[in-house]
Length: 604
Image (cartoon, rainbow, N blue to C red):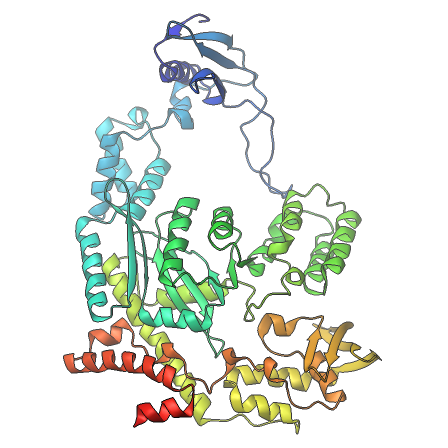
């Protein structure tokens, strides 16, 4: 076989692949090299069982099957001056058992879906025929399984891919017409649709005017997560979610996407950024997706990117459960994450854990440590996170919409139902606003700061402050200097109690206070340690800088005056004209309210 010539590299590969299929081994491309002209001049193909065995599982008690056993069989060829490709290197000796032809056809390199098979799968899937029946019809048509060049799993993968991309002309047109109709009634409604090279719809993003106004108010911190919300096309639902003044989830916009890769996320994030007038958030929380990390760094270079802490810590059992001292390792890992008030303390506990339990070879822990600035709380202390460290806001939003759609929901209906769900979400916010303005929480102490916060904060946020205020009874001075104070807190964890020490810096004359727990930076609520120091220094009123506009109930917020598209559809022409005037008048009122003179002028 050495010296055999072929017209192209592909022809040489196909020859070796067919040879491998008959002999019973898989074939894969190992390497290639280019000449100075940039053209490929040399390639090598090897047995698919070449290379060293390496388990992909980090749990030694749950190994995964691996085909690699170091087989040295290979074929190498190069491009000659006459334009022919010739075999130069050949080794036909294998170190493993070769399969029969009836089994070797299941190697990945030998499986393929013909254009005809793909077309028939698509047609039958559109007709609602189940996958097992769809596959069986192709088997029967081919005259039996021995004549089929693909598996049922290949068919399933193809159908899932096509469902994400497949939006028929009627679906795409109906969706676009719906968006345009909404936009004609509300010119601030935003939508964007991306198509592939064949003109099929790939990705969609939209945001109602209320969503955009809410982003102006609460878009400093955003959570983003893609989960497969049930819909006819199996497309990931991608909502951008934040937290409103009640601490409830609020939607800024969302998309339906065909893939979860760099190209798709780039389009989605750029589109969202354009929708929000190029205003970037202070922080964004996502899962550990590598493609998302690359895109966020490129599009939001000044935004702090945080990984969902819950998603990371829930993997501990899977990644470390095989270790004999798993329980002790888990406790120490949680201690490093939650009890470290500084990066230095985290690294001290972490390194002690690695050495004590001989974890230096654990790739998962090594990767987490290298990326610690993306997920460990003490590295995030200098940024505001509105009390969020996980993407569960996004997940709860998915669960909320799940009650409005099902497996038969077509895309246009999905968007319409989205609007209905949004209206329900808005109604809950309106009800909570009314409760805050018509009801008042009783104070449980005589401190003026409690009344101060109660009078301006929403009920739920006041309750968070009240919890910190009453919990200062568990705090006690350990050491106190002019501006630096050491406070000890007795903390109960389960059945156990432990004492934790916090450093509080307080300058009464300047109205400056900070604590090593960094709760104010994280949640926007002063911690019990800071409150304890203020009270014991005869400072019973909070400085104005520690009363955040974000949690106040007594401010006018533009998004609360904007109707959803669901409400606009049900309006009469007179009501629509009224709505348009209200929006324009609101802009005037926003400017006029800045001083008494302009306010009286407009009123007159």
